[in-house]
Length: 165
Image 1 (cartoon, one colour):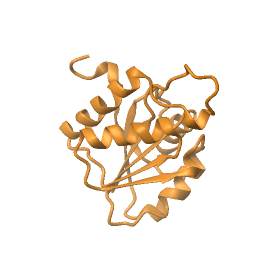
Image 2 (tube, helix red, strand yellow):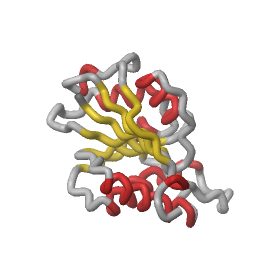
Image 3 (cartoon, one colour):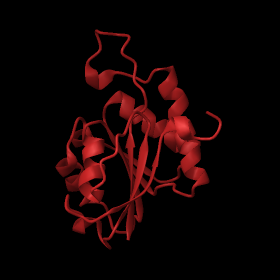
Image 4 (tube, helix red, strand yellow):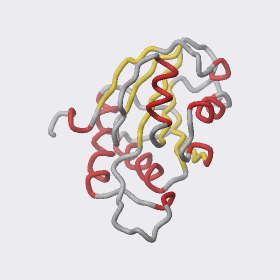
């Protein structure tokens, strides 16, 4: 079994209309929610061994803040294909992950994040900003992953539902 953590980027800043979408940063709420989600994942013993994130500023910053909160010692990779991607792009990248990684996190954007949860689990769940879905996959190798994999949604957490909110 492999475990996939699917994290939508935290709340972004729409204040500067001159910035390209790819370059938008997190707003104050996003900078607050991302480390809280990371700390929660650490408490749940769900720290990944590998994080693969979209290259967009808001996704990369989310990944970095989450990783910092759980004292991440693994590898953090950026992946241009994840910017506004659908499930096939995520699966294509995940198929190349070494099998030594048991737990991997992807950080990206909607609607791709919601669609990925849906195709992997058959469960339609809204993923608002900084939400994480934890999916158990019935595979031994990341190369076996397809958009038809019969995964199981183990958890879905939102920042507003975490203790201390």
